[in-house]
Figure (cartoon, helix red, strand yellow):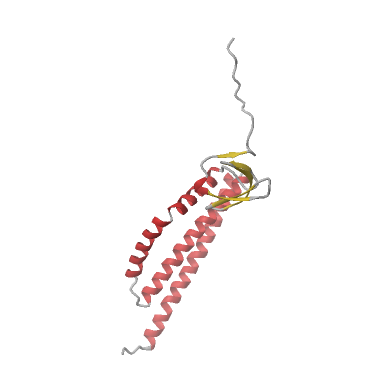
Amino acid sequence: MREWSWLQIITLLVKPVFIALLAILAQRLSVAGFRSLETRLLQRWAVLPERKGRIHTLIKLGQHTVNVVIVTLALLMVLHTLGINILPLLTGAGVLGLALSLGTQTLVRDVINGIFILLEGQFELGDTIQVGDHTGVVEQMTLRVTHLRDEKGNLHILPNGDIRMVVNLNRSRPSTISVQEPE
């Protein structure tokens, strides 16, 4: 059995705490950076109210992604510091990631389509839209699904990956193009 000196025990305990503190600092810096970016984007691009929601949603998505990366890296560093071989964990995560990617293709399609719906501003909360046979008011939007309330009060939950064509009834206006009859 291996004997531990006090210095080795203290070092073993201090390194994970130091890594955790660095992770917290990195997370706070990323939050501040995303807030600053959001403020600058809102000042430049948020002339229309619907752009504010779009910018805010995209900033939150970026912030969440960065936080997941920071926590994952910090956890792996702490495990490595404690003497745990992380190579099998990384290999297993790669295999698991491959299996999940094959099993979650529709989820990925829904999320990617949801990002494009937000970026392009196809519709916003409160808009009355028609998607296929469903017409109603957009009550809630996530990156994965859109909640649509019809005039009868029924709630339709539409996966964003299934939304191929949208008619936004709030933005409908008559065509300004006039066709002249030949004489």
